[in-house]
Image (cartoon, rainbow over all chains, first blue to last red; front, side, top):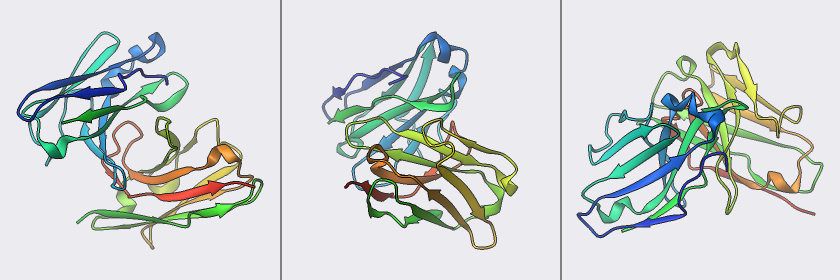
Length: 108
Length: 117
């Protein structure tokens, strides 16, 4: 994958978990376009963070994004059972309008 | 409610064609760009194609350029993906998604394409 994510993450209800997304030097200059998607099998993927730190309307403020250098991060605070899903990051890249990470399966 | 519903997936042999459709509802379809993205088991999502409002700008991923064609019918509120010369590696769940490529704010539930001999 053009963007590297840990394959798994876990936390107990009420705890916080942070998922990282690391890009190559090709992607670094465009990291303002980082988005995060939540996906549960059989359901439509859901945008939870865009432009690295912004939340779409309707997404709880338990979801937050940050970035530093080549690494973007998604933090889910106050974990709830419904947060269990695979989370994918995406970013624009030199060779494609958008590339995705390999996904992080979050277990609550 | 804003909704996207894909259809047209199925099983085909290598070299054959399929046409996917995406029906939009709950918003002014013609006012927002659209995309196709696919997800194969065990792989990261792969963005495939983008079409702007008015079909003025169209982009494709290198893996599908020349084989796939995106189009939209704003009067019908529908997005299409014509897929020709299908390969086994094209097998995946195909999603339509609304918005610029880097912030896809609404997705459908997907339609499954299987390419196998």
